[in-house]
Structure formats: C-alpha cells, structure tokens
Image (tube, rainbow, N blue to C red; front, side, top):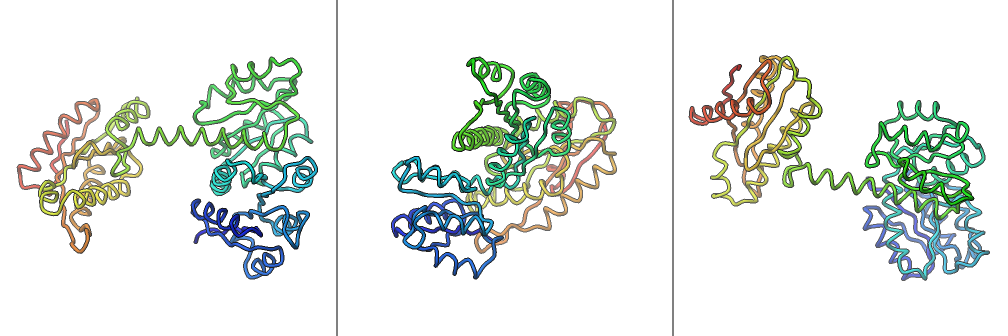
Length: 414
C-alpha cells in the first residue's frame, strides 16, 4: 500500500504543484485547502497512513501556523511552506518541531521538496549516530534527526560509539564533536577511517572553531564534512541530506558498474573481483558451473529479441533465487556462471541438477505464448585449482553437454 502525504494549501495552484511532486515521489497526496478540512479528512484515517504533511504557514482559518500545530500534534513529520522569510516568521516556524521549511519565492524549493519527500521515506532504514559529550547539543541533534525519520543513536564518547557501530550495521552517518573524551574527536575519526571508507560511512565533524583551522584538520583526518557549532537548523539538515545523497550516488555508480544491465546479476568483472577478494583463501572443496541456454538463437530469430530478453531475465531470477548464497554472474549472451565454494561434489551436483530441472519446468510467458527453455551445464569439482583452471575445464564440459544432446549436466573432478 502506498503511503499518503497530507497537503494543506489554500492556493489551488500551489496545491496542484505540491500534489504533483508528491505523486512523482511515488506517494499519494491528500490535498485540502483549510485547517478545518484537514481535521475532517484526518479523522477518517490513522497517523500510520501518512509519511508526512506539507503545510502552508498561513491559511484563511489558520493565519499564524495553527495548521502546523495540528499536524505535529497528530505525530506527522511536518514540512512548512511559507510566502514570507522575515525573521519573525522564521522564528515562529522554527519554534515548532518541524522537519524543514520552504520559501515560495525561491525557484529551487520544489526540487528541494521532491528530494526531501524521497528522503523521509528512505530515512526509515538509515541509522545515524551522534557522538557528543555535551548533553544539550547531543539532544538537539537527536531531535532534529528523529523528525526526519532516521534511526538515531547517541553516544557521549568513543567506547559507547563503537558499541553502537558494532551492533547496528545500518548506521551510515556519524556526527562527531571535537570535544569528546578530552578533545579526541579528530583522532577518533582518523581511527574510524581504518574500518570504514568515505564511500560507506559519512562522518561530519563538529566544533566550536574560533581559529578557522579545525575544518581542514577534520577533513584531512577523514571527515566528509564539517559543521561549525552553534549551527542553524537549515545548514544542519542540508549537510546531513547532501552527505547521504553522496553515499547513495556512489552506491548507484558501483551497482551500475558491477551489474549486468539486463538481468541485474553481477557482471563478469565483478564476479572475478568477488572471488579474488572474498575467497582469497581457497576452499578445500569448490565447484564451478558454466550454464548455457539451449537453442537461444532460435528464440531470438523466431520471436524477436524482446522474447530473448524475457528468457534471460527469467533464468537470471532462478539463478538469483537458487544460488543467493554464492557468487554468480551473467558472463554474456546466454551464458551464466556459478561458483560453489566449501561444498562437496555431491552437494554441488545436486544444487546444479535441481537448477537444470527447474529451468526445464519453468516456461517463460511472452505476450500470449509460453516459451519452453532448457540449459546445458558444465560442472567441475576441485580441491585446489585456481578459478581460471576451473573455468577452462567447465567450458570443456559445457561443450560436451551440448554435443551430447543438451539439457543435461556434464560433471567431473580435476
């Protein structure tokens, strides 16, 4: 079920625009033009149905932010949209426990709102750790982060922080104050970088810096970013968002570089990288299977390449399902590879044979046709050969399986 966003805006044009952005984020806008209407609509539902609310600061029946008070009291993270950005209005808005606020005369606000809505949904699975020995500032940061739906943890020193990191692998962002454990914040970040790269863990250093020297020192020691304390609400949240977006962009690039574009399986290059890095110590028992789809060219020639793509995607799904615990790859064309470390010959042969049978029993629905597919597999077992030797021998066995009638597994030990 899609999640709703309550949009309270008296301007019909503004309501339509915000609702469009909500739909773009894959959410359902529930649009109303007044506080009274919002109260009625909300009474017919539950808070759990709503991701957040986007609320105009001034409405005909709520001229001073009363609609904000309503959505906050209903436990909805609240984003405020305002016509004015004067100091008095800003103070009135930030005096409430809002997520963020946007000023209408800024042409970039709607792009920012779109990103913010997406973040609120993503943040539910992201851990953030605040490390600060000052309770007041630590509590303030935790409060801001919780409004953004993060899973938030707080520690007053290095030992407590390391315990949280050990128990919570979903932590992706840390905010580390300079003053912890007797001004050891910078040293702590340098130590963290031995275990966590900048691409997998973002760290923001925080300090009351009067000399202007600390930002560079933090960055040279491994921090991704720096915040000078005391900081304003807006800067804090923008830096948090930008650092997480950077991590996600890097992960997207890594996934694209490592994956086959059609099937989503790891590609040949990533397959070899995984084995070289994760299986440097050769398994006592290991096996490798080369899989080739039978008569695949005739599928393309008869039904077209879209049908061929449907077949490849189906087989890839079966491989991902049956071999989720071991390295797999699409090698190219209709050829796939599975590496089976730490398994006996009997175990490996059973798993591969089960896969062959499943492929033959799984017709591919393409338009109004059911396409039957089979596979030929070369499977080799060894106690000590390297991956290149395994591939060479598996390729010979694959050729044998095809020349012997197809839809079979040819296997042997070397």
